[in-house]
Length: 423
Image (cartoon, helix red, strand yellow):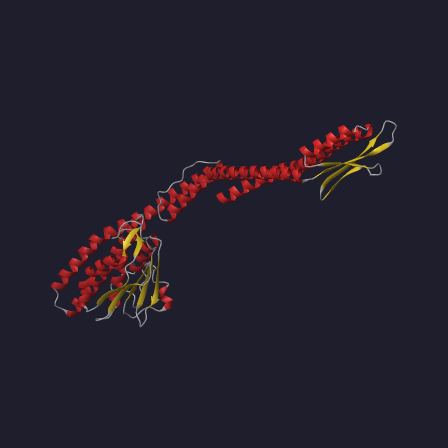
């Protein structure tokens, strides 16, 4: 918008310069040619008076002086030469009759004057005006930039506020400055943001409080079921108790997933450079024991990359994806984490995979697909992954892995070599 305003302002100034300068310049051109004709006529008439009076000496002195001081020339012609002034390729040719007091024509004076001095003068005038016009346009452009930035400053502030809202910062507010229309818009946006913040805050508080309050009774219920199972000898009753315990465990995971999702949605931070393979190695260490129990290999390959991620986000993403991969991979399988190009991280399991029709739904909350989560899955793991990756400006998609299994492909913004330190 600033560029358009500046170009419009410069164009307006250019039109004004052309409208006022070009007619004046053409008038000045005509005036220069008229002045040259008038000056030549005065010199020719003076020489004609000397010729008519018979003062040859004074006439010769005038001709010599004129030809010495100017690029022109004076010639004496016979009385048959026609009077008049013409411009041709050589310049001005002006002829004046020398008339005696009795009216007879004694001869004629022809004054020839080249147009080179006039052309040079015109080039000088036009060049000066062109340089002046360019200077005026440069000043107009600088002034236009200043004015455009001053006029659009409230809009840039509103755009900055909108960018912060896009990143999830519901505390963003716009300064109510500028023209009345801009102040009204800023006030409306501030009010709408406050309303949205209140509603989202209430929703997050409800999810967090409800999940937190549910953890205590679920823990107590699981302990009670464990005690019941210890004192029951009937295999049918024990089986029912174990099924109830499994459901309690699933509900506990669901509650923990809701708490993690609420924290992910509420968290607003700035991404920082992260060394991906360092984080992968750290999470492999945390999950090694669970993988070794079923002889599942955790493998990483590719070159080390740096991405922009909020502190803690990549760890949570890997934990959720590795948890799902461990649950669906068969005993003795392999989970591969690889980096093939800047910003790209792929986690490939050896499980049954997921049909293409179900991959689009995999990121929905509470959705559990065959081969995607284990029996105790909450259906929130990939929803949390998508929330965290999206918050960092990245994308996550599911694809079929070569040879079977599922490939979770995560793309984040690569970190420049000079941005911050590594983790």
